Length: 66
Image (cartoon, rainbow, N blue to C red; front, side, top):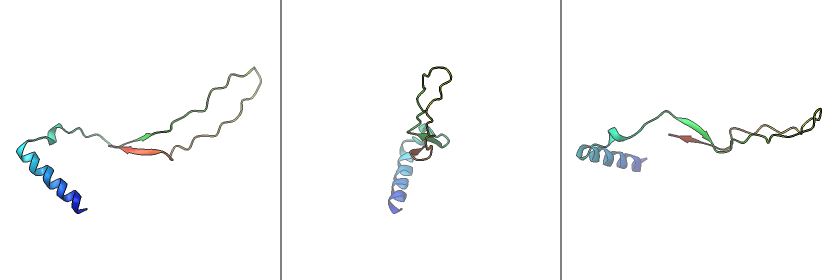
């Protein structure tokens, strides 16, 4: 925690010398999923049922993009 404070203080002192904070782009938080696969389409003859594919677990591989 102390390291964060030191870095924040250094950045604020740097901003006084050369303003750069206005150039930073800030956006809302958004979750990005690494594994967003759909089950493959199946080409089947008429009246033949396809093999069921389980739903992918959406919440296993995710990261917070800021």
